[in-house]
Image (cartoon, rainbow, N blue to C red; front, side):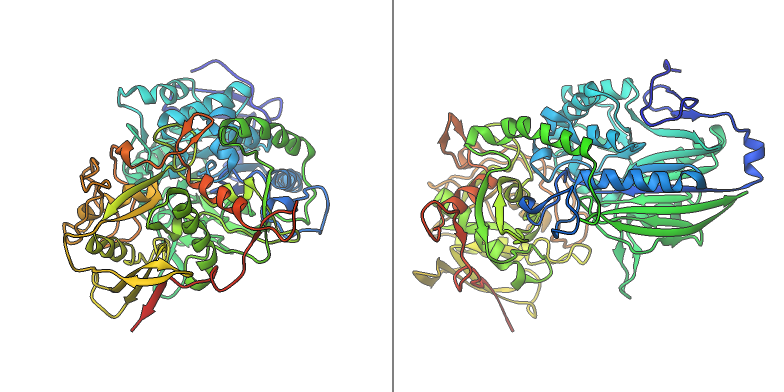
Length: 640
C-alpha cells in the first residue's frame, strides 16, 4: 500500500490509502459491515458530465453575473455549480453519505480548456467543488496524451485533485508521449478502480470510455483502449469478491440514444449494465443528453446523465436494503441565475484568465474578455434545423474564405461547437467566439485551435466530398452536414446514396454563381480551405467508402499533398460521423500568416478577425453582425 495522504473534503476519521496504479483506493471508516448490511441505507450521488471547461456561464459570457440573482439567461458557470453542490451536500448529509462524481470530457471546449496544459484549471476547480472522482472522455485527449499528462500534472502540483478512473485505458506503450500519464498512474492519481467507505457503506467505483467514444478519441496517440464491457466485467468481479463493496458505480463515457419509439433506451451507457449486471448504477456522459428520469436497466440499475457544460447538476438518491437497490428520487437542478455563486471558486477563475490569455491568445493579439462584436439575434448551432444554423455556418465559412483567399470555405455542423447568443447585451467576447471553434491543435505551432488548411480539388472531387458528408448518422443527426462559402449546391435525398448532389456552383451572393462540371475526373482545380480536423477526415474519404468516393487533395500545381491514412474502420456502416484518421499533415497545405512571428492561421482566429472587420453603426462602437438576406443565404439547396 502507498503511504497515507490527505484528502480534501473528508471527515477527520476518513483515511485515504492507495495501492499501485491499477489498484483500489479505500476511504475507511469505523462502522461495522455486518451491522450496515442488515439495515436500509440511503445515499446520494451528485453528478455531472461533459463539462468541457465551461467555467463561465455563456449566452453570452458578458451577461454572466454569478452573484446577482435573476438578471440574466446564462446557464452554467462553475461558481454557481460550486454553490449548488455545497447546498445539496449539506441538505443530504443527514440522509446518508453523499458522493460527487463526473463522467468525463471535463476539459476542452472553452479558452480555459485551450490553456489546460498550462493551468490545469478543470481538475483544480473540481477539487474545490469536492468531486470524488471523474473519468476520461474522448475530448480529454484532444491535445494528445502528452498534453493530457501536462494538464493533470499542473493541476496536481497545485494541490489535491479528484481521482481519475480509467479502467479500460492502457498505457503499456513505451512511447515517450505517455511518460507523464505513466508517472501519474504510478503516483496513484490515475487508477483502475476506487473504493470509498463513507457513512458505513463501501462504494466501488470504476470508469470506462465507451466503444463509440473510443472511435472519436482523435488524438489518443499511443494510448489504447480495451473493450469497455470486458474491462467492466473484470473490475466488477474484483470489487465484489475482493473488495467486498456494497455498491458498484460506473462512470461511463459512452452515451445514450433513442430507440425507434423515441425513448432513450440504447447506447453504450445502457449496453454496459445490460452485459454486466453487477453494476448498480451508471453515471453516463458523451451524448450530452439531459435525462429527466433515469433509464432503468435489468429492472434495477439506473443510468443517468445531465446534458453538457455544467448546465445541470444531477441528484440521484438511492436506497439499499440487503441486495435490493431502489431509486428513491432523481432530479436535474438547472445551473442558472437563481443560484448565487461561490466567491472563492469565482476568484480562482478570475486568476486563471491571465495565464489562459498568455497561453492561447496573446500571440495573435487577443485577450479572453475582449469584446469583438455585437449580435442582434441568436446564431444557433442547431444541427437538425439546417435553416436555423445557416447564419452561424455562413459567418464561419465566409471567415475561412476571407482569411485564406480560397475559392471555397468548408466545414460541417459538428465542428461549430457552440452558438453565439444575443442575451441582454448582444456583446460577444473572445471567450464566446473561441467556444464556436475550440477543437484541435496546430501544425506549425502547438497552441490550441485547429489550423486552417487548403487543398485543391477537381469538380467531381468536390461532389464526392459533399456526398460523403450528406450521409447522415441517426445517432448524431445533422452533425456532419456540409457547410460552404463560395459555393452553392443542390442535393436530392430521394436519389441513391453517394449520388445526391445534382448541381455545384461557385461564386457568392454579390457576384452570382456559375455552374461547374462535376463529372470530369480531370480539368480545373478549385481551392478549398477548412479546419485541420475536417481536412483530416477529407483525406480518409476513399478509405471510409471503400473506394466509392475517390479524391486526393492537391497543391496548386496539381501535385498530391502527402497524407498517411491509417487502417481505421468507420464506427457505423456508411456513417457520416467519423473521426480523423491518424496522418501526417503536409505542411504545404497549412494556411499561414505572419503575426508576431507565428506562421499559422487558426480556425478561431479567422472568425475573430472577420468579426472585427465588419462595419460598426458609428465610429468607436463595436462591429455589428449583419442580419440580412446575405447572412441567411441558403447555400445547400434541397430539391426533389
